Length: 160
Image (cartoon, rainbow, N blue to C red; front, side, top):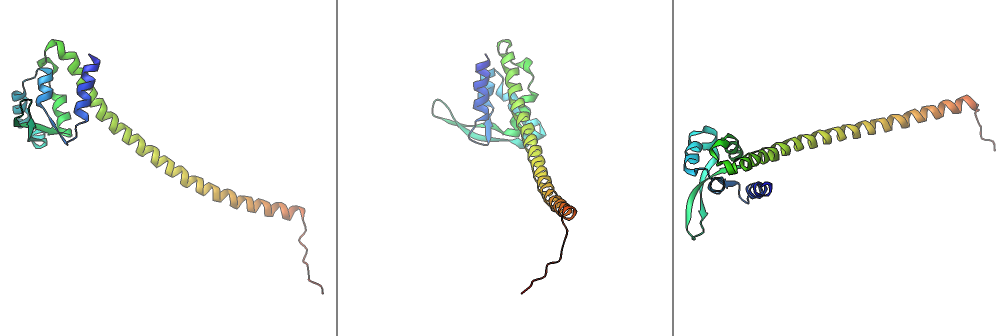
């Protein structure tokens, strides 16, 4: 079963358009898509995230179907009660919900980590540059101090 929800997840995430049709997912999991369409219309956030687009059917006809942008799709998936899915597919649906959430949450966490690491590297580079300058300055002062300690400074005059 793990393979099934992974295939459905990949089809959802790798959608070429910015909108995801709800009917194929509803059909796959045996969820009433008309009831879900009403639910989407009644939810303020989902209503703003939804639109209707034509979907090519197997018989060659195109029908306008409800679809959601990715933000709306994630919200919609997370608010679906798994108990409305048939018992045989319930665990698969729960795994699907987790995959979608983990994918997006993981992406957000990954972006935060990348930003944090990049900031730290920039700070380290700045500190490295400052430390390099400080080391060079201290080396010059140390060399001068050592030279003065072990050598006399005699004025040399040029003789012709």
